[in-house]
Image 1 (spheres, chains in turn cyan, brown):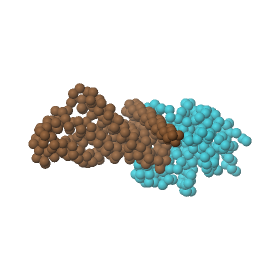
Image 2: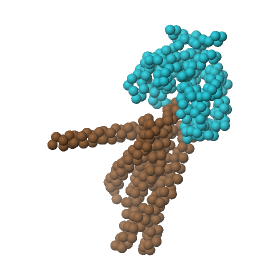
Image 3: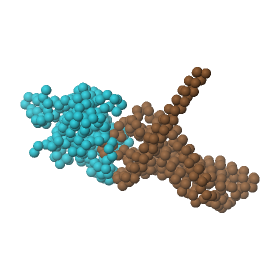
Image 4: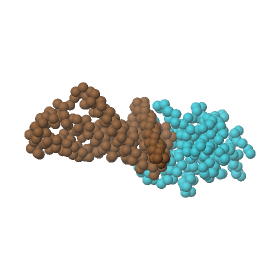
Length: 252
Length: 273
């Protein structure tokens, strides 16, 4: 069965909120179910803005973004009962609610969307807390844990809603080797289908400063440069099969 | 002559800019109020097991924890206004006026204003700092990304909690003021019995005093809470801008309280009795 497109960008333009100059222009991109994309680019090239626009947090100034067949419109009122199908992990500590405990941060979305109390919601998300090795931090205030652990809490929080697409904004920046390796291993498991997600392969879109080389499955790569998104050919390393053939890959 | 003309022009321009800025802030605040009202009405049943505990927390912070201060303010008002005025009225043989005086000065004016100012000072400013910091650190966007309406999660509990707190604290302030006024009479050995004192206060009250008081405290509480939330959330703040937003909250709220007070004064004067 061919994978189906779940996110599509047609001639998308994005501007910085405080700047009249375009940050991204004419971005055409299609993301299929089960894809794993790594988006690279220099600092300030628009990687974060691209993810925020995919999550519907900042508006586009041109073109359209479609997710799951519906247009993504920033600031549009959401009907009661609406649950996001796209999860987002922010850069630099994940923007946790500092005055809440770690477990409460992870459980809050479930409690809010399913109208449960926080203790009930914590019970529901506990498997994720265990899967991400966060048990010993569960009762710690989120504002007092280290940045690498906060990033992991943000990942658990995003996964608690069982999203179909996970956006990760430079998740391993500034992390030591141990945490970076953990992230790589966990993302591979998500891409292959985590047991807590009923083995459904997760679609991943990750911005990064350090592309992952030589892992299996190999992420597809796109690069932001001069306000444009360039789709890069698959990275092949000896003895390792590259990413699956994607008809959208442009070979320069 | 030319210089004087230039000065006048500069003054008029400055005045014009301030008026435009005031109108713009009023417009934005009105829009924020309408959005919050819409969220309160449309999401009343949504996630109430998450939102109601937040409202209770606000009620504790803005209500129960402020009871000691309200007691002190109420007692001070009672001693200063009721007690001393009663002492003067006794000398001129007009103690029957004490009921009207209490209702006009304390029940209708100072109690709602005093409770609102105490809550503004103790809770309004921290609210701006909390929300401004949340906005500055990107927590608001994080809530949006999780499908949690930031107005529903951050603003509604504060507005509802602070409003209910101002309404309740006003009543307590009135009770403490009445009580301390009577204690003053008792201590000063004035010829007014407790029954007389209470009877004159009750006799001076009109039926409309109660709905007007309810509406007035509702307006004061919601207005102060909305201004605090608006200043904290209305635009992305840098951390160093948060104290400025807190100062603006106090200034705008005090002006709003005075305007509302004038409106309710006119309403009261227009009512029969």
